[in-house]
Length: 210
Image 1 (cartoon, helix red, strand yellow):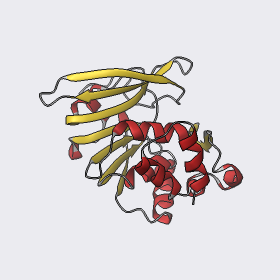
Image 2 (image 1 turned 180 degrees about the vertical axis):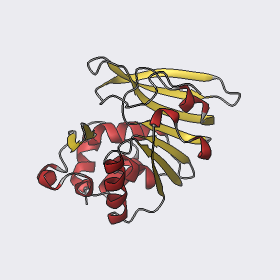
Image 3 (image 1 turned 90 degrees about the vertical axis):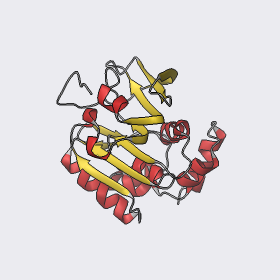
Image 4 (image 1 turned 45 degrees about the vertical axis):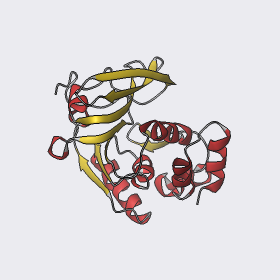
């Protein structure tokens, strides 16, 4: 388990006890390449192949904290990657739908989630900028790679009262984590959280529309 990692995250400002418990009970070593097992609980991103990374645990916890999950939500994740973020979400929400554009990563993430005993994550291979329209709307949406701008399709698939957490910026040196909240009548409220550095969101459509 990852109790030490959870304690470390608490010391740097993560306060949501449910998020910290999810981190403590989700072995990150299941989601990193075998040659990096000794670094599995390090609070830093690690390479997972195909030019992608497993995010720094602090960022995983912070983004999850901003979702304000209660336990009954349907969550859309864009960028399955290693499956670690999906595993954390799965312990905090009712159901997770995750889209990954790289088939090999989707397969490996599915196996890691199975090894972790997690059954409420659904993975599909596809263009994350288009979301998962067949399963919309979603109570929460989290994006784990940075688009140049927030895809309209994701905003459209967010339920009224929902929250979207997404890093935005085409230049990795100038990205900001954003929170978008959709009001009961569809009105949007957006705020910037903090500077971040993510791999770009790979899309087959450079200017995705709803």
